Every structure is written in structure tokens, then in C-alpha cells.
Amino acid sequence: MTNVLTNTLAFDFGGTPFGVAPPGVAGHPPKADDGGAPLREGPWGATPAPEPVSAAAPTRPTLEVKGLVITYQNQKTGELTEAVSGVDLTIGHGEFVTVVGLSGCGKTSFLNAVAGLIKPVAGSIAVAGKTVTKPGPDRAVVFQKATLLPWRTVLGNITYGLDLRGVPRKEARLRAEKYVDLVQLRGFEHFYPGALSGGMQQRVNLARALVTDPHLLLLDEPFAALDAITRENMQAELLNIWNLTRKTVLMVTHQIDEAVLLSDRVVVFSGRPGRILAEIRINLPRPRTADAKYCSDFDLLTKKICGIIQHSASKKATWSYEI
Ligand SMILES: Nc1ncnc2c1ncn2[C@@H]1O[C@H](COP(=O)(O)OP(=O)(O)O)[C@@H](O)[C@H]1O
Ligand SMILES: [Mg+2]
Image (cartoon, rainbow, N blue to C red; front, side, top):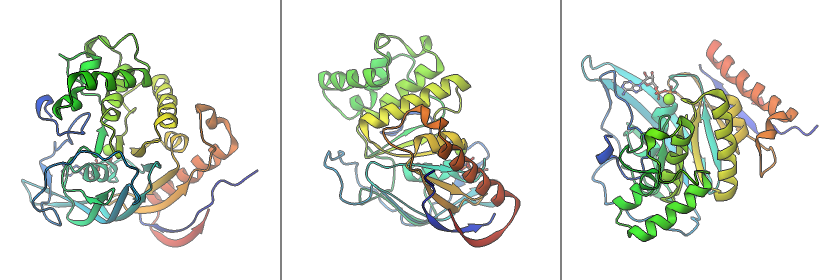
């Protein structure tokens, strides 16, 4: 059997409101329900107006994150919580990379920083060579819950981001129609969100993110709110969509099998503060279907990743590990 675990790595076991959603954000804004707020320091000064996304394939990596540190400060007590500590991550054009780790290890914080929704205290983030300082049309985010505009139809929701950018109505509609087909909602394009199932709503959300043709698609546990069977269907759909679009994707999930099924590379975070323990290349063949789950390499990969996470949760150690 071919061993698909090919990397040699050093492991350090250590344990909108609707009307005002920033362009590119296709779901909820980040929650700040415990009184905390990210510290406003670091290289985040005045921000230029968003520029239109260029269709040209970038020669630079799509995402370059260096030395990222995210800290929250409780506004009542002043207490600091370090959520992410010194993360370096590069994602190439057309790569699908997933971050996995225990609940509370900083995955969402990391993704929100890349989205420009929170500001890190240290480090830098660049998308296609351009420093991230705020949300922009070069990134689109899909959160766990599809927050669709209830007064707009499926088509109206998909065109929403285009309408905000002043794309002519006819062109926006033509572009949206293509994504209605891609997410298999033909026949439902004139339905309102209230008449759609959770899975269908999340399909609209995905289409709404993709139609803006972002450099980077950011997915935060996009199927976590769905029942098990719908989630599996959506994973198969996302594989198909990726096969057709080859978008650069950064996803976070705590579901290891989902990460292995969908990704080219899985990045394993330590417990909080999140640091990278391992980067594991998923060499399962592409184009991939949900049947990839039934190959022995799939089991090997999921077990290996689970083992790393479990080990990091139980022990603090540093060594080099070959996989
Ligand atoms: N707005 C916030 N204020 C204070 N602490 C927060 C805030 N958001 C997240 N945290 C803390 O940061 C840590 C990482 O959270 P998060 O990024 O949501 O983790 P994950 O997505 O991996 O579950 C957790 O300890 C969480 O309590
Ligand atoms: Mg999260």
C-alpha cells in the first residue's frame, strides 16, 4: 500500500446585521458574546478602499500568514486570552487547506483574522501579496449558519454581494444563474429562505460566496449545523464544486474525516493558544469523490491526525516526528 503520509515534520506538542455585512462576508459576523474584544494593535493602520478582484492567476501564494498572534481582552476585567500564538501558514493558488483542532483552540479566531474581521496583535496576513487590514472582496466567508436575507429569493441572495458592488443587474443575474446550477438549486431560485431546508440554505450561502469570485474562500465549520446525512451530502457537493472551480480554500473544522476528505493539506492546531503542530499532505487522488472515505489511506490519515490531537491534549512535549 502506498503511504500517503509523506511529510517530515517537527511537531511541538504543547499542548451583521443584514444590511451592513462587510462585502465578502456570507454569513454571521464573529460573535463577541463574552465581553471580549481583540486588541487593536499591530500593523493595522489606515485602510485603503477595497479594489476589485483581479481575474489573473496570482504568481504569489494566495495566502501568506507570518507570526500571527491573536489576543482577546475582556472589556470588563481587562483579562487577556491568547487565542493564537505564532502561526505561519502559506497556501498556494488552488489549494484546499483545512485547520483542525480541539474546540476553543483558536481556529475561528485564525479564520476571522484572515477574513479581516479581527485584528491580530502581532504578525502579518497577505492575500495574493496584499496585506489584509479589513474585510475585502478578495475573500469570501461562509460561517456555520447561513444568514440569508429573508426578503430576498435564492437568486436575490446570491446576487446580494454583486448588487452591493454595483454590478449591473443583468450581469449579476447571469452570474448568479451559473451558481444556482453549481449548488444544485435549479427550480428553487425564486424561493425565499424560509421555504428552504438547512442544507439548501447553506448551498445558497456557498453560492453567495463563490459568485463574487474571491481569491480565497474561507469556510468556518460550514456544515456543523446540519444533520449527519445532510452534512455528508454537502461534503460531496463541496468536493464537486471544488473540482469544478479549483478555488483556493481555507476551512476550519473539528471533524477530522471532513478535513481529510476535502483537503490537499490538513493543518493541526495545538490546544489554546493555537499553534501549528503538524501539516499533513492528503495525497488521496483528485478529482475526489465521497468514496475516498472507503480507502485504507483515508483511515490511516484520520487516525494519524486524531492521534496528534489527542496526544497534544494529554501531554506537553517537543520532538521531531516522521509521518
Ligand atoms: N470575542 C472573544 N472574546 C474573548 N475571548 C474569545 C473571543 N472569541 C474567542 N475567544 C476565546 O479564544 C479562544 C479561541 O476561540 P475560537 O477561535 O472560537 O476557537 P475554536 O474556533 O477553535 O473553537 C477560546 O478560548 C475562546 O473563548
Ligand atoms: Mg470555531
